[in-house]
Length: 254
Image 1 (cartoon, rainbow, N blue to C red):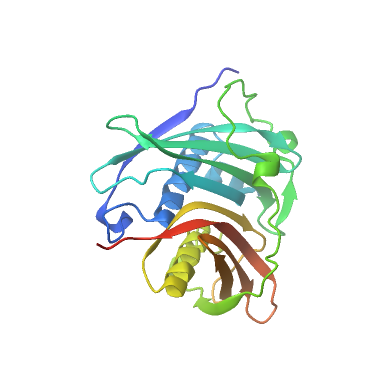
Image 2: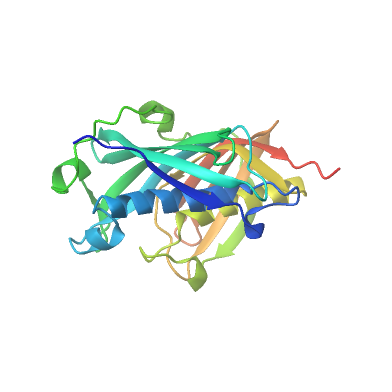
């Protein structure tokens, strides 16, 4: 089945931007998530359709690299397409660009799991979803396989724990903490550590455990000359909920 990438445009709104009128790093995750969901809906494989089969898409890993950040008034164009399977993973790529002049802002790659929401056990998306199209679209593969692999635990002590209680507004359709907030908590931790607004220019997040309503997520990390590693654990059980690593800048307010 010949397929085309999915293209959608979003105006950059006031609540998307930081103190320099450029998009916050974590806000990008909202639009990546939305574009992937809308494409899945179009293919008949969206959240509601899968729920009828006791299945759900869950983001397992994502890596984003931004060269330029869109500004207030820009229109963000996201081009996205599935890019294959590897055992339990279904991969999807993204290109972020300006709808006004075509400038490429950045790129991203993601790995998704198909889970039974009752027991959180993964099933093979390529085998189980009989309606899954055979992709022939030959798009670029940015982050997939080894370039979107497991993250090693930092070889230095993690410091400055920051606790987040997961309230009802954080909970999404899958009934746990939405993936966008892990990116927000990461950016918040970096801001606390830096005592200034920051922007993550490259980040990979691996989602290791779901976080439910009422749970406490403790984020700790380390930085080294623009590099960061942050992880979040569930208070009490100490289970690792997520890991994030990448590179960041302090926003120049002058």
